[in-house]
Image 1 (cartoon, rainbow, N blue to C red):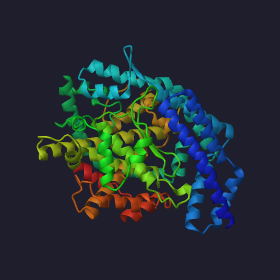
Image 2: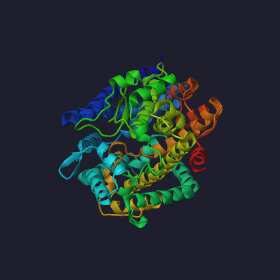
Image 3: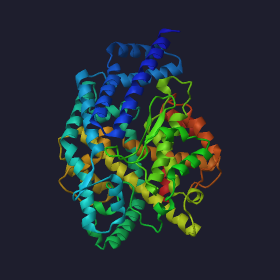
Image 4: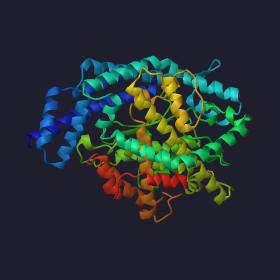
Length: 527
């Protein structure tokens, strides 16, 4: 065994243990919401990052990269280089960033909006926004949830400045620019793709926005010009309201976990072990959203949810289990450093690809409470609702990408004004108020420089769907039904099994025979 091999073997051993300790502590913290669990996670996260602060190892990695010839070793060294570089700053500063981020995240995860004297969960907030038609009630609920932005605003801005200080000490313009580069992404390429999406979907989205506004103004008994953010059935208008004659919540008033298990099982993708160790229902103080955590890169994969038997949690469960089957499917013979997804947006693509099935007529007929509906008409409504959902999310992602980038460029500017300028530009909602509504989005704290990956994931999901439908299933792209084990076999072989052996762009070309291309998303959801 040569010097590089010995170094990498030791790095894999140490990093796996540190990563596992931090991941397990994070899982415990977001499930319990307890201060002591967050403190335990913070200590273990700091210890994990301390490993990469080692200057001597960093120099070794730089030298090894000049001589390494084995492709697997070179890939590991590249990943290590980026990980080490991100932690080469002042040790106390890195610790402070971890502590601050954990403290703010706990505030988010334990926050419960108050309506009058009653504390309500996010599930309850979503239900009211979706079902109520009284504008004053909707406003009260929307504003109650946004108060978490006021609670964390000052701390979050300080955290952003600390992140920027670290990035600048390492030679980057700001933290956002650093995060993209170390994630093997280029800002100008993302911007080019997003600009193309805006240009080629603008007409379709404007037409849908008019349709939404007509429906919502009639539903709430107000003029179109009096519509406000709280009328769009979502806290951020990130998926779009239900405006068609289809009630998917009624369809999924059954055991959605069993549906998900059956669906993935038909594809040859087992989820039983994941669901057994996961935390799936509401608890006081618990994280109110959903996530998937690969605890050890050796098969212990868990999801966190707050399940209700409705369409939102059906699609979310399909989404999170999509992450899980990817994590489980990585080649176990790979070194630990490579035993994970090729890139954040690639695993998002898999999750988003499976998520869309909750609006698929074939899926609904097989798994849902589908009785008496006109197949053709119902299927068309589902298709329209999915189109609305995808285009609305595309516009919302644009808001997040552009806002967060500007946030890191200048955190001292008028962020409240900037937020609503982007909302108007991309989501076509003409509204503003001088409150830190932007700060109520948890991703800015817990997943910085991340949100653009959702939209890139949607682009890749459409590209994968096109390939699966046409090449593997020999079906039409719209309403392609994933019930064939051949779909699971393709994904396992071409996407899951390689792990992080290749850069994301090489993986996509190897799997699909072409680079990432937004035209499939545009064709699928504007035609």
